[in-house]
Image 1 (cartoon, rainbow, N blue to C red):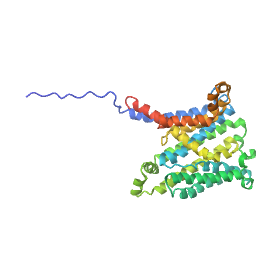
Image 2: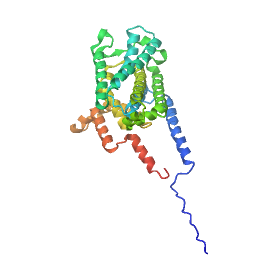
Image 3: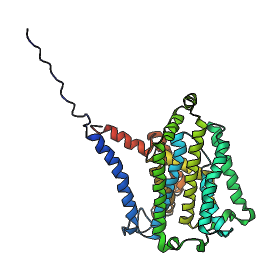
Image 4: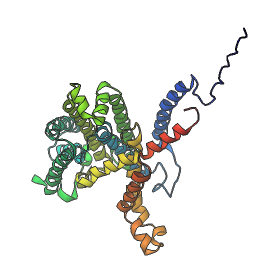
Amino acid sequence: MTKTAVRTPPARTDAPTASAAPRRRLLRRALPLAALVVLAILPYSTLDLPALLPGPVNSPGSLQLLGVCLVFAGLAATYDLLFGHTGLLSFGHALYVVLGSYTVNIAVTKGEFTLPAALALTLLVGLVVPVLLGALALRVRGIAFAMVTLAMAQVAAIAVASDPGRLTGGEEGLSLLPSAVPDFLAGIDNTANLYWLALGYLVLVAVAIAWLVDSEPGRVWAAIRENEQRVAVLGLHPYRFQLLAFVLASFLAALGGMVHLFLMGGSSPGITTSSFTLGFLLMVVLGGAGTRWGAVVGGVLYAYLDHRLGALGTSEAVAGLPGWLRGPLSEPLFVLGVLFMVVVYFLPGGIAGVAGRLRRRTPGR
């Protein structure tokens, strides 16, 4: 009898090697660390980018703009914990930024609290209020939940605008007393310290949310986002896990309100508006809801465009354009709205979705 030779099929050259996965994991960890190092040393850079920043990178105006972008990146990440990871559409997330900003400011400006005591009071308020309001709002679902959270935020907006007892400053806002600001955060000479404070807030939020999402409650949040009824059938009580996500996201947003207060030197009624919360939704959608870094990227992009498009609209380059083009470009909200529609229609996964598709098309992945 003749033996039939068995041919072994050739190995696929596009299959991932055994060492490819560790390399990718190492790359995923190295990139955030590299970005953190770059962001940390930016205040030492004298690079001048006139088309992108109002002055050299280390100038007070540029550092404040970059600090605002970092704060909004952290706030967008807190909103993504609700919307992207748990599936809760809230229109009242701005309320907790307001609590963080105005509680500290009123305590030190009107109540003559010391700064540590005011910060401690704000931490307590930022924890207790979300527990109470979240326990009430989460009794309903879907669009009803969104409307309840919007109503709660509108109550805060009305309270700030009405200026009860001359505590909030009304439409003019409330400036932070210079004597209440620590020396290392006071004055334009210390803008770099404010920038690092904003960077520290972003790192804290990013690390906390990454840990929470990878924990057991994080996996339940993902299951609730996909199918809440199935989670209830398994006996896991979605209400409790949703309340936990609501409280954590709101508490982290209150911390962002405190950082925003020091960065801007006061509390502005602009953070009480419903459009402020809608901005968080735009940030998350632009970056990619429910992704690891999408909300952070979307927050930076939205905050940067929101501030720089105003300067672009009044620049000589736009002033020389025809009227039909000059008008829309002079309105930052119009440009941001167009950008939002483009992302929704052509990039449904946001910026993070584009990066994911590029990785999948790379040979060997």
